[in-house]
Amino acid sequence: MSVEPGQSRALTYRYAFLIGLLELAIAVPMPVLVLHMTGRGLDLAVIGLAFTIRAVLVVLLELPTGGLADAVGRRPIALASQLFTAVSFLALLFVTGPFLALVYALLQGVGAALHSGALDAWYVDELKRIEPTVDLQPHLAAVNVFQAVGMLLGTALGGFLPRLTAGLELSFPLSDFGVALFAGLALRLVVWLMTFSLMREPIKPQGSDPVGVSAVPGILKDSFALSRSIPQVRWLLVAAFASGLAMVSIETFWQPIAAFTFGSDASDSVPFGVLGTLSGVALLGGSLAVMKWGKRFPGGPAALAGVSTLLRGAAILLFAMMTGSFGLGLTFALVYFALATSNVPHDTILHESIPSARRSSMMSVHSLVFFCGIALASGPLGWLATVQGPRLALGIAGAITVASALAYVMVARHFTPSTGATSQVATTEREGGGFTTSPAEEAN
Image (tube, rainbow, N blue to C red; front, side, top):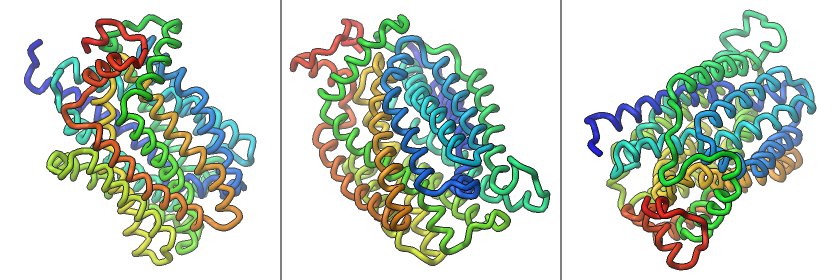
């Protein structure tokens, strides 16, 4: 098949625009999300419980929804996910106690389970269909840049919005930090419309026809077999677990830790806006660095991901100890810079190691493990933060993140840039992996 000049690049920028807009909607409430919940009467233990319920629900639904995306198509699953997530933030906008926090957690869990893999799998498969020999890392890095820009703009808007609207004396539920959640909710509805418009009907997963719900059990069986049989995927899952733990820890505990220094008055949300904006700038900087220099990093993508994870864990540990504004800002920026420089090589290795026909379900396995890390951090660490303070809880998360960098040493032993899903699937079958692939899937 001939590839039209710029065709794959056009797809990447169309997809990147959509992902950037989605990240903008996600990021707007983030700088004040925990402050909004504590301001409505919830303590860190209840907040941790809500995040735990969300994570457990994702774990229960992750694999069936990933298999469903591979079976019936990615577009309807992506649209349904965004609706569930939008309604969850509507519940959080009106939260005044544990009940609506529980409703938020349940709806978030369903939305997150549906989301994982649908959009990404559609994009990677479409890109590989247009250009079968495409080098994924530069394209994924470009998407990451748009995502970082969305986060930068979103965190800046969300952090400063409560301060800018403080003089308007907005009534409930927009009062205090609620205005940032309302802005995020409105943007999520825009994202749903843009997804409906920009995401064309999904192509058939390469090597497999979407045949409906009856195909889900076989797809899930294949996914478990692939997770066991491809060595680098096993170690990527270890890294994903630690990454989930680190992510929810920094997102849950950075605001209470920063409040020790800056206070928690909604009328003076500027420091949180500055830190939120700084995280977006750092994420953008990391994404641009990977796009420009990532391919030249000594040791390849596994080495880049490992070094970045080590830096991220060290920065989390240092942030937990900081009391001054400069130290908080510097270490917070390093956390998000390292997040960007680890995500792209990690995702590149994952996509190159799995077959197209099982991409959504394999990404759901990956997301399941990621949310197991979130569940561990949200529950026990949330309780520990309530009893002993957020600094100790975040410090533990940082130490686990540092240790998880060793997983990429094992990934590097099994993966080279030329190692992709085709060779891995063939090797697994020869060694008796036993998953149910068709001849067309083997050829993929």
